[in-house]
Length: 193
View 1 (tube, rainbow, N blue to C red):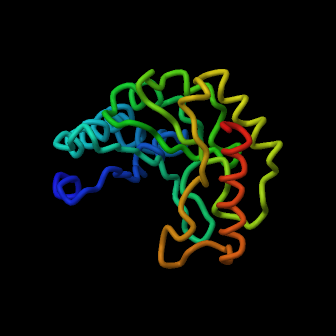
View 2 (cartoon, one colour):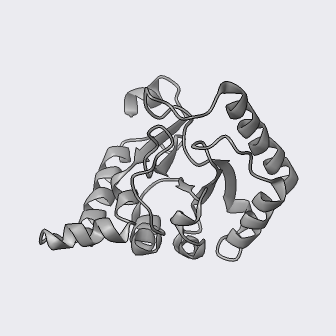
């Protein structure tokens, strides 16, 4: 990361799958059945991220995308962020979190209350898994719901994940992807001006 910064990079985004999977009650139960504590794992992953970014200069913005999987439009885990939110949002030494909120399987926005005042959240409200275009009115409504737990000026909007997270990609064509990205711009302009 220090080499990226030295080369002029000012934004680094980490994809964190393990903590996102630990939001899933079924996966947490499976870990507990093996005699392990899922919360101990959350703390281990927080420490790992913090160690990885510790040498980054202050001028480098660091984001963590909590990825629930994105293989050919399929996901790996479900469950809201509540079980990891307080520790992860407070203790992870990054500037913002990119959270998948494209379907109800991500739970509600209440866990956003734990995001430290110095950090922001990018709400992944637009699906990169399906071609259907979300309505602008629904996106505005979802952002308004989120502002019950975090200030609007600490929020942003994006697709929930990348369009080609693996070589297999997702069931969208380029025109679908362009329409989704245009919707991100339209929503951001309508909501934040």
